[in-house]
Image (cartoon, rainbow, N blue to C red; front, side, top):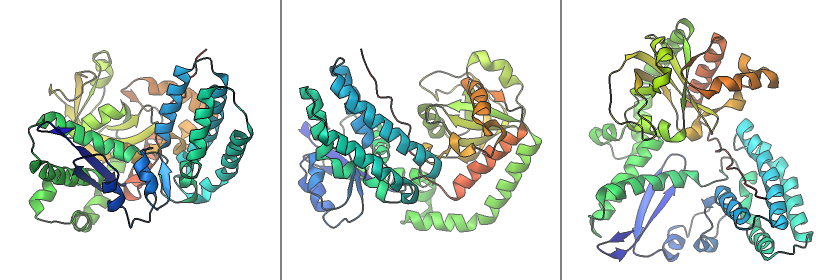
Length: 405
């Protein structure tokens, strides 16, 4: 970015609940090394070399690595050595991510993958490759050997840098609005407000509510709000489950992008394609829409239908989705806190066996669709509320490792 023609850099630091933005005149690593000089937790980052000097356990973002491996294959479509390295790494990582999706980011379950990791690196060390691209790929793995799988030895450490990636998108959106009109002085104020805004978003707090409260500590504000709403929350959950048992459950499909657009628009209007208008007409007040995130394969929300909506505001960029309903959110989760489909295994009729789940996959190809077995909706709704009470960060799906030739 630039300020009045002078280059600058914005850094973002985040965990699962807090975000902080900083501005510096350059991208030199001295700033981040000084800022994290006494940090002793696990640092999750991309492959920027400045982080190497920080004396703490580190986890490199494996999604960045996957993208680079995809590029290597596309750039060298006939290089069998590169393909061999990528295939072995893909098999290794898929097994790990399956464990994460089933059990979460817990060392107790992840540590079993240490032996396959060591086997992979031993194979890599003992194999002689002919191509320059394969040897370059091998050298990269060996250089970062001790920071690629650190998350296997800790609880709650993600294997990717998606939290920071999402946070930097918020700054990019602000930058597009401001369009270079800020100054060296004003950008610090912008970043403070953005830090507060995004932290509120990550903790499920309304930004304007927090500003109006006069509170200066977001955690204290959240705790006070939680105490005051404890009884109300229990009543809301009980009422929602009763509504689910009496009304009908419907599937509402989202992508990660359309889900975030729905949330940004106030979580009051959901929409469907024009060709699904007849299905939409069958939905009644009090029915519950269960929101499923395609691609990520997670349940992320439950919406109580209020009624038809004539709203035509531009909520989504992908499509207008003109068949719209006014809804009241019962559960709204961030994608990383969603309930993975695999968590339903053995608990819901749709996932009693592999055969039953394969049959259910066709159900997920369009929405809205009614759940014919009410028990499926009951299980999903209760698991969504459990995710609200005890949020667990789930891993994102692995990007496909492409091959050519």
